[in-house]
Length: 166
Image (cartoon, rainbow, N blue to C red; front, side, top):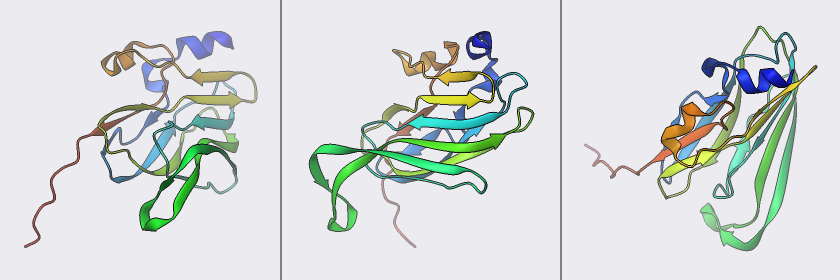
């Protein structure tokens, strides 16, 4: 089973179905899981959330249990609407069953940071037998595809100027 975690083909990576988002905007993204561990069904997916994301809401899935891990912020920061943000979501775990020969998507809605760049979401796919650790982070985002078990990546592009309404 350990070989499966290392030698999965490129199409098997866990990826965002929409791999780019706009700086400072809300983004609803879906992590696609396209296989299990060999013939073994996926029974959980744990995704770590980058520290720069302060507003994250996972989408529940019918038939799956959702667990949200939170950590306190060192210093509260003002959120939208004036409420103070005192903690952030640090990880999300969906637990259920996804047969190895099927695929599914796991949703996250988040407020993206104002700074463009790459965000990585290390993910651990646990199966009835075995697991895949999609946790490798490249020194250069352009080298992401060269990794054997890359963490899902979301590229934040610069915010676009507001367009005038006609």
